[in-house]
Image 1 (cartoon, rainbow, N blue to C red):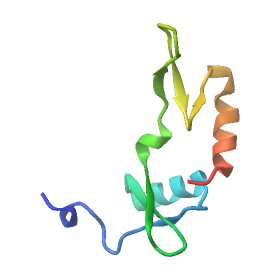
Image 2 (image 1 turned 45 degrees about the vertical axis):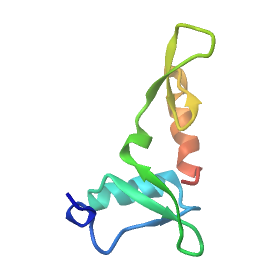
Image 3 (image 1 turned 60 degrees about the horizontal axis):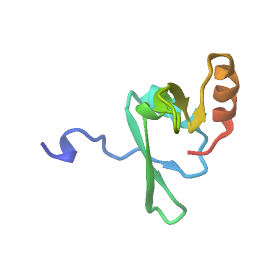
Length: 92
């Protein structure tokens, strides 16, 4: 399989100062699972994928417990709305 077989052309990208909310909107509107992130010179500096918007369980250091984490923040159920609200303004 080649990249050209699964990628759209022209490639849809976002600038590194694009918010996570805007990136999610673009992905939903275009029905794509990821966006290359480019800097001011057009160089690739990262990739945002749909898996970045899903909570992942992470182990707590020095503990046997695992808790969900999203966007690098621990996610107790009572804080989900606060985490999503802060993510709306966070750059990719």
